[in-house]
Amino acid sequence: MFKFLLLIAVIAGAYYGYRYLNRREAEKAAEKLRRESQQASGQDMASRAPVAQKPAQPASEDMVACPACGTYRPASAPACDTPGCSANKAA
Image (cartoon, rainbow, N blue to C red; front, side, top):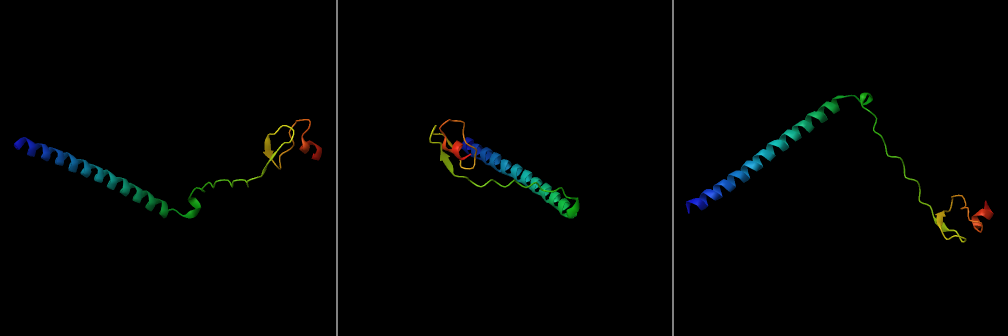
């Protein structure tokens, strides 16, 4: 019976010790983040580096099939090099 209680105590101690250490690390990380955000908010807007914006995605285009070779290409693309391509006639 004593061995069983000792085993439970060791498991509980390890569990609560692990929780305590993780909580301390999380508090340190939160404090570091808080300090960094306070330092950043103390800077004026002119001294901050500009934020790079993502380039706009191009609009989607319809695809058309070449009647001669059967490959698909964007409708605005130049004609393929196949001799019987109808886009060659329009170009």
